[in-house]
Image (cartoon, rainbow, N blue to C red; front, side):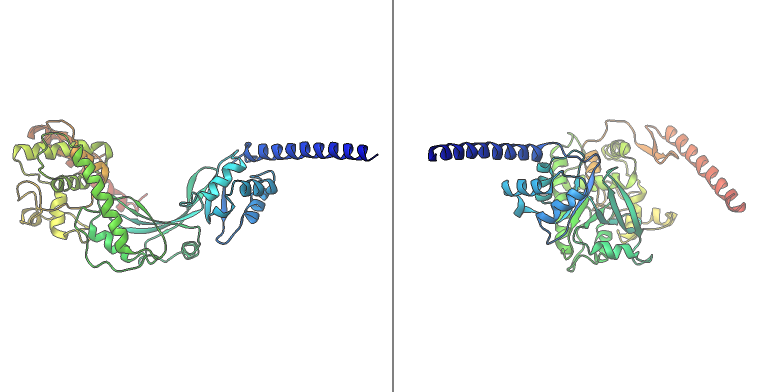
Length: 394
């Protein structure tokens, strides 16, 4: 009798082990298999949250088939303690294992709301936008010019949220003075800026910030990035350039940056200035004259006067020979590389062509024809504008 009982117990125990092994195997398969999501979602992990709450939210959103298996898998892989606060983009069919990796990896939020402080050449603006996880595109919630336009309520709400991403986006061609003045107006930043960095030494780029970040430290980060970009451009420069140092290359790149907003033209514009320098011709570029008037402190906001074109300043390349003594703005990486690797051309002239770009010429006769064509376009536009004004724009 006892032998039969013992035999049955062993049988039941073995069956139990097999069943447990099957359950574990099934659970593991469920954990690593493709998930049920048919479109991307943004998973919000609040500060102070835990894996139990997150797993329930994921189950409610249809991202996982079982909250329990999700938690067990996270515990088994020892990832539960690595849960990070933020907003995370989860793509369609992502497995439970993949989702755990996304929400524990750390780093910047990959979706949700972001506030972008844009430092542009002509204006500083604040943009509040939110990523649509389905289209993977940002939808603008609000945009305003601080100190000029009324601050939208949504900005105050979003900048305080722990999972809102904050960025400072610096455009190519802004001056160091403009950057410093803009940073002073970003209230989420802290600290004073004692001196304006040297012109051209800040890298136009997008910089992620957090509330309380120091302005001077952000400027140091920008300067370090520009130093790396300049060193790379100098190391990879074409032979025979009429510049003798990285600093002169930076000056040339800043002029290229201010002369064209068309990316495809940068190397052509650079070739014109290289050819002029090689031939001993003056650069005769308006942006340098403008810098001599403003010294980088704001936008001129009007056309140049003949007296300003004739007035000698350290930057007026209609009057001085060669390069000006300093950059006239902060050039981006593309302009640095254009100055370092310009097109090989015979161009020594260029003028606007009415499309936003320029018409290039090798001879003065060709250039005069291009100038005449541009004057014609200007006159036609002026007549059209006057006609619209007289008819009320109808």
